Image (cartoon, rainbow, N blue to C red; front, side, top):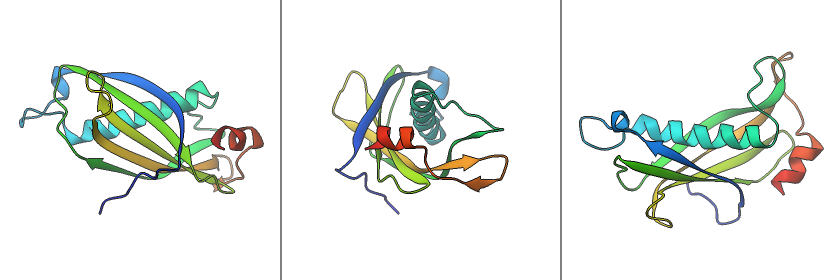
Length: 139
């Protein structure tokens, strides 16, 4: 099943992630599990940049699903350019989308993925309303 990254989304963050020789598998390309790691790095770096780093005992974002569409094989050495987008803020959740390109081939999408992100209270183990300041960042 392939999920489509929507045209209507807001760019919120970009980062470069080095591809290491050890990230490649026996097939000579970056292992598929690393694509999910790259998506996670971009998502967590963005969250940290807006002041909500992972907080296991408090309130903040958690993902409730994740996907990745693979289009081209990434091969080391080089850097991945991850572009992070948001869309569709709801009462307790929003969507995150990330495209992965080679930094030396801007505009060529190697993979894209995303996650539904839920605002969560670890003390009550329940979803809670997005804070107004977060909602403002998403619009």
